Length: 408
Image 1 (cartoon, rainbow, N blue to C red):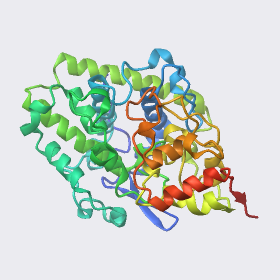
Image 2: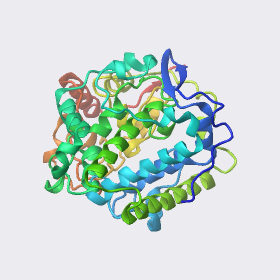
Image 3: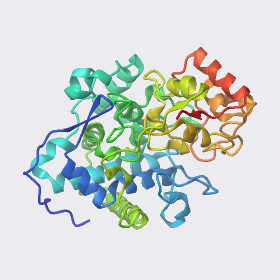
C-alpha cells in the first residue's frame, strides 16, 4: 500500500451526511462525490465479492450476486476461513473493513466526519442522525449487555486471546473456546444488529442493510468506525501498534485481495457501470396473491427484519425489498438448493417439512439433520416471525407455493 493523495473534492464537499428521499422515507448516505468515487473504482462490487468469498462451500457452487460472477469460482482468491469459522476470519473482518475506511480518510482528510465512527455504542435514537431516528428500534437488553463489553474492552482483554477472536465475536457473536459455533446468536450479534437498526425499509437506494451498495450508507462508516475504535483500544491494551510486522502484513494482504475483487467487478460492469448508479429504479410491478399479500409483508416487517440480510444485497441468493417483484422472490425460492447446506431445497411445493425456508422460520432447522457446508450457524432459526406468520408460510407451501399474479 502506498496510500492515496487527497481527492480533488477534498474540502470542497460537506463533511456530514447527504439525505435521500424515496417512497416517502428519508435515508442518509455519505456525500455523493464519495460514493460516486467508490462506484467508479468498483468498491461496492469488491465488497460484495469479498463477503461472498467467505461463504463458499467446498463445491464452490454459489451463484453470482447482482450481476457479478460467483466469487467462489475464483479459487485462487478464496480466504483461509469462511465466515464465523475462527480467528483468521475474525481478523479478516476487522482489517478488510478498516482498509476501506483508512483509504477514505486519506482521500477526504478534510471531510473525515463521514467516516468517523461512534465513540460509544449508539444506545438511543438520539445517537442517530435526525432523518433516520423514526426507524430506530430500542435495543434488547442482550445487545446492550454485549455492547457494554465492547465499550469497556480494556476490562475484558482476557476473554479474547487474539484480535481475530475479538473480530469473530463482534461479527458472529462467537466467543473463543466454543466449539461448532454453539453460542452464535443474532440476538447478541453487534455487527448484525447495527446494520439492521435505523434503516428505512422502503428506501434501499443507499441503505446500510443493502448488501450490494451499503458502502454508500452513512451508517456503514459510523458502525464500522465504532468497531475500529474497539479494535484500536484492544490493541493499545495489548501494547500493539500499527508498526507491528503482523499488522502491516495483514493490511497488505487485505489491500491486495480487495484490489483483485475490484478488478473483477469493473471487468464485469465494463462501460455499463453499476446498476445502482442509475437515477431511478424500475417501476414496481403491481401484484396480488397470498404470498404477496401475507408472506412477503411478514418477512419485510420491522419485527422480522429479514431484509437486513436478504435485502437488495441478496444474502443466500434471496432478495427482499420494495423494488423486487414478489414473482422474482418466489422464483428464487421454488426448487432452489438452500445455501450453506445441500440437504434441502428452499421451498418444495406441497411439502413444508422438506422446505428449508419453513424449517428455518419455524425453528425446526436445528433438528433437520442438515449439514452446514460453509457457515457453522446455517441452522440458526430465523427470528421475528409470529406464530401466525409461520402458519401462513406453512399453509402457502402446503397449498403448492403458488406464485403471485401480475395485476394489469
